Length: 459
Image (cartoon, rainbow, N blue to C red):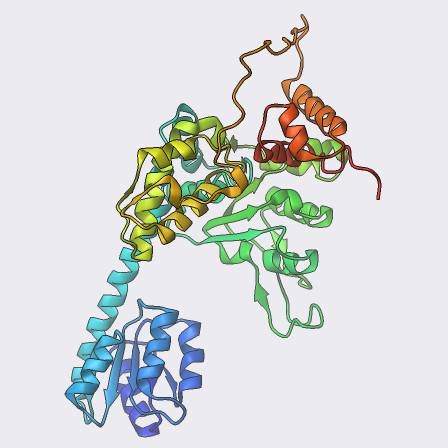
């Protein structure tokens, strides 16, 4: 319980009454201290209307922004109907006039705490529903197989899972689905993008640090692996992890223990590590940029999420789901998406995968002029929504003979893209035309094979 009042006697009386009822109580004498206490985490608040540095309604609004679940009961010596209405409009749980009966305050507090518990339970249930395996939209054979595999992974005892797939395919959604469907669902889900922080900060985020471990380490800090005890840690973009950190992560995965930066004590959290990457880790192992032993340790259970272009039949399902989601969340007067718009979406190559489709639908919902989204509501994306060049009706394309010993289709694709870029002197539009692609399709392959500088003149 957080009690906020500038009068020491009132704080003392409320603390005594609440602690007598079995509650743990922290107090604050002004708005600044109250916010600091609130951000540390509380279950309910008793808030005075008049404080030295801020009025109670302003502080109430700020608390509701920070955590709308925590019930706030307003206390005031200046009771009025208008003030009570204002408090309730801003989301106050109750409104008590001074002088108040302490037994009544304790009773109101008990109801408030019941409300907190119920709201958090509902929020957790909704989070599990949104993160569940069933929340992965799609009916294509690839997605049905993916859901089945994720469900098996969730039930397994394996401490490591590797998820691969192109950027925007939904690797984070798959990781959350595994967590939500596992025995760890009630535990924390901690996630971090390995490419988002420099190596020194990333090590501290993962493993934590001791006070004085480095210049700015003024207090002890627990890392994500420790905070996720009995839960899951999601390491996105694991391919960007520096080699020294790869070694430390491997030690943890092998021994299930680590030391905080600057520490001597072994920490032994019980966590599952789910790693994800859009990079080709096998190729990185060959190049010496990713540890082979870590690659095999992470890949005890591995799953690949197919790109959206390989399951084009799921595009209408995803589009309708996103329309419903954004219409509800944005309060837009949109009820659906027309067949013509769906046809336009189906013709796009979606190099950005599900994330790109989500962004397109969000924009369309915001800008739509009619209740049903039409092609005119969709962004042009530089012509990307136009159909790919149709096959020629003249001379048939040259047939490539398959040698008896077979060949690598990926290697052939890379070689053809390289040849097209060289012939077009690095001009992507011309190279795409040579291969019967649009710019988005060839841009994806240039990224995939790392051919950014092929065909371009030095300097």
